[in-house]
Length: 67
Image 1 (cartoon, one colour):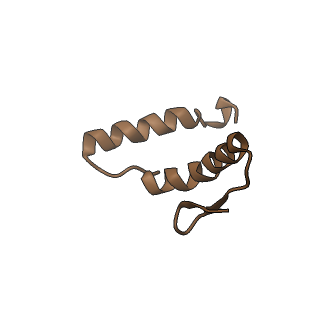
Image 2: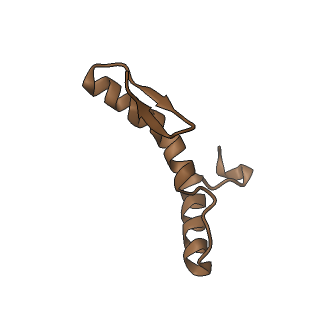
Image 3: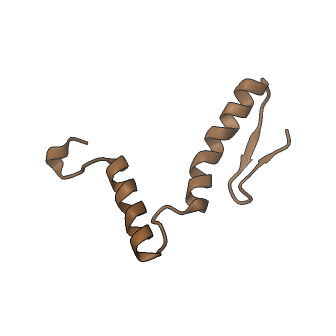
């Protein structure tokens, strides 16, 4: 999204949140569970591609399931 709309980019938002948490000893907007839920399917895709096999991702258990 262009900056003229008032959005300075995800990277800036991410670092602003990180520094706020460090100053206030608080919690992040996107915690580790959010990160794993976001990254898990991508990691499963890499395992599938490089392992040349089909893998399944269970979002409730946040685990790669045996195929």
